[in-house]
Image 1 (cartoon, rainbow over the protein chains, first blue to last red):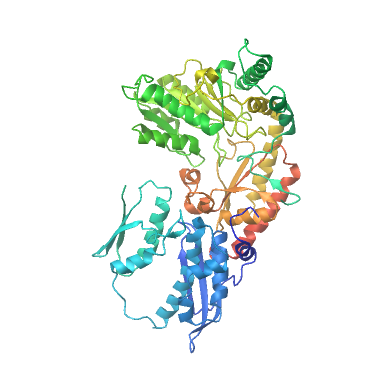
Image 2 (cartoon, one colour):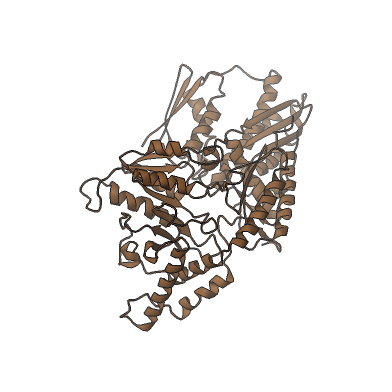
Length: 211
Length: 395
């Protein structure tokens, strides 16, 4: 097949597992937005005694990478405890799919984020969340590890594109070692905003480019 | 490849017509020599005659004289040559003797294809000023805006004849008239319209025209640039003295011969047949709920249909269509190499979502009438399937 996707990806894309919505879901989450590209919704049924997932479904408004990842991670999450599900990484999902093209990683990460957000949603709804922690440089750095550099398919932190992070009075300032007219600048910018803005004590995100 | 593969991406590349290959064959195996002057050896003279003949035929299809037509490696090179050649001839600062230093301002439309758009950006980096003309909801530039944008510094206006994605035709004659009135050179990228949408330089005031062979069942790697007599254009491919000393490099004689043959094989009857297929396809596609046409309903390329479907994503549509044996294209960010949504859909006021679910269908000579219903049935099915798994559009 001349496509850049593995046979496993194509198989899950053709016949996605656990597709649909759970009307009486115990938790749900929507990641992404139609305005900036892919979007994924994840629904959970949870056994409140064991904190174990009894059913999980997803919906996708996205490309093959997004659909296939949604399919594989819901398979991986089925029957697991919430703690086990939180430990599922994008890397595990990607390996289970036989790898993904670098440029398609962000659509795939979105699906993993969707699953995590659904678990978080359950914890929030059921009073399982610990104290809200204030946003620090480390919190921002951790989130930026989920923003991909599409050139290589690795995150911004690991590819050393993040020059500086500052957090002050609700404003997060991120300086990237990247020219402002870089091929993926607009895309990276959007993804950073998407990851940092939802933090409870962040009012605005400022991204600056060097070079 | 599937047994019944239906190819509807003829705006990207076309299948070579066997008659074109037959016309080219002798120039690979018999008259394969380099084109020489009349004082050269006979094989070279045969090659020269073939090149001259091909040039005269392609030029004539534009109403141009043979010496006004330069063969290039395709439309990307042609448009680079037009923008950068004019910029070098008229726009460079003092010190470059090739330049008259008339000015450094260029005007292009916002929805040009990348060869023009990125050439303009490259010139911008060198200090040129570029005005990007807005377009209306159909993709047409405003003639008033163009008129206002031209300054004494303006050296070139480049507005495409037809859009690569949504197929919208521009009023080339009116744009040319404004440029002529203001004394500014006018280039049009006719990659997608030539020669199906007639353009005659004896009637239309246009100074430079980009054309290509590979979208009319001719070979890849050959195109051309019409250069009106007297148009200042600097040579930027340096080397020998080929192509009126404007474009160095051993001539691609089989390519030129193939190009001329491909032009000859395009007939008004064939174009009318494509238009019929296009209209029936658009009618069928717009019956799908939450769909809308991109581009102008009538002022559009005869072989282009472009429709956006809400709540679904283009790459997924494309892959499902491929599995069913159809080749189509999309303006979705997921499909582009830059992960950016189509600048054309955004340019006509669409949002990312509209680009995300946009699908382009372009007909060619080898499509048959029955392909219309086949592709319409397949896409209806694919859209329905993808909408069933989409979180959007359910309430």
